[in-house]
Length: 253
Image (tube, rainbow, N blue to C red; front, side):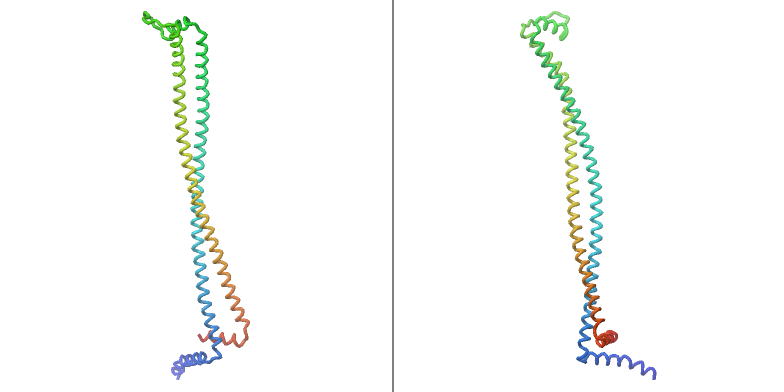
């Protein structure tokens, strides 16, 4: 007897369900159940989709922020290199000005000596050349006139001045080469900084775009949750008969 009762329960349940469905009076309730089910299904999937995208974009934002921080460190390294290059260039320029001033003084000394040469007699020039400039203990085989002696004396002064000026000019050339290299390296450092800053700018734009999407998704999520809560509030405040019938229908389903 007990077995017969147990076997009849599923059949009775089906009959009640089909009877409930066939009754036109219950179609509104069935429609509400279907609508609520669809809302719960698709609304829940939408919220899940928004949350998944928010999580993915947040992680991407974290990675981009990390890359920006790493590039900021590289930029600081490049800026430190630039400061070293500038210090070297400033030092070279200081030395360059000193050498330039020294060369200018040597050139002035030569000009003054050549001007003074105009007031010196040819005999004095001859004595200077044969005894001091080009001291020659043997017999002198060549004869020069006064203009030639003055010219030789002037050439001697220019040669001695050149012996002092040329080494200074070589140092100046070396100084310029160092400055050229330092300036080239400085430009490369600046180009590296510009490249890094440009990448940071692109990442910042991407972060801002992600933030905009995250904000919109959060707003949609909040809106959907709020809408679902309002729907349940409306259902809860409906007429007791509809609410009970709905509960019964949900229980049967």
